[in-house]
Length: 286
Image 1 (cartoon, rainbow, N blue to C red):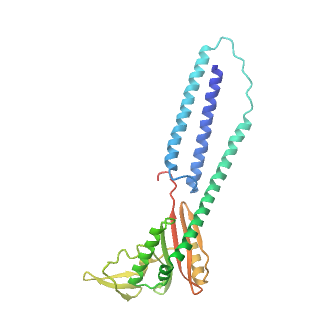
Image 2 (spheres, rainbow, N blue to C red):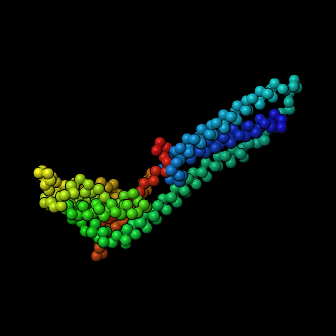
Image 3 (cartoon, rainbow, N blue to C red):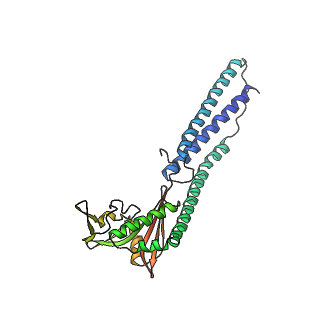
C-alpha cells in the first residue's frame, strides 16, 4: 500500500472521529438541556470515557497523517506529482448535516416513549394499590386531623411504598381549612415520624392537636402538612374536589414522574393519591 492511500485512510479516520464527536456532543447536550430520558443510568460516565476515546483516535490519526505526509515530502521526486481532481464533497457534507435532525428526532421520540411507558406503569400501580389495599385506602381517605389518623396513615403509606417498586413514594392529598382559608394537606409515610410512639391521644385545638409528653405540652399543626401546589396542580385539585371529577393527572419533568389518582366514595372524590418516582438516567455530574 502506497503512502497516498495511507494518508487518505488516516484522513478518513480523523473525519469519522470528528463526526462521531460532533454527534455525541450534540446528543448529550440535547439530553441534558431538555431532560430527555433515553439512555441508561451510566450516561455520564459513558459520555466522559467515550469523549476521551474519540479524542485519542483523532490524535492518533492526526499524528499518523503528519508522519506520512512528512515521509511523502521526503521521498518526493523533483518532478511535481500530478494532482488528481478532488471529487465533490457536497453530498457527503449534506448527508453529515442531515444526521443532526434525525438524531434529534430519535432522542425526542425515545423520550416520549419513555414517558408514556412510565405513565402506564404508574397508572397500573395506582389501580393495583386501590384494589389490593382497599381497606387501607378507605381508612386513609377517611380524613380527620388527629393522632390516630396520622399514625395509621403513615404506616399504611409506608407499607404501600415498600411493597411496590414502581414508585418511590406515595402520599394522600385532602382538602381542609386553616383559619377559615381553604388549603390542601398532604400526608406521607413519615407523617407521624415526630410523634412519640407512646403518645396515642391528643386534644383538638385550633387547627392543631395538643398533647403532653415528658412533662411538656406539645402540638402538631395543620400548617406542617400543607401541600404547596403549583398553579396547574392547584387548578386540577380544585376541579377534582370541587366538581367531583375522577380524572387522573400525570406530570413529567427532568426525570421526575408524578401521578395524581383520585379516590372516590359514594360518587364523590374524597382524596387524591399522589404517586411519585424519579429516574436519574445518569445526568452529567450525577
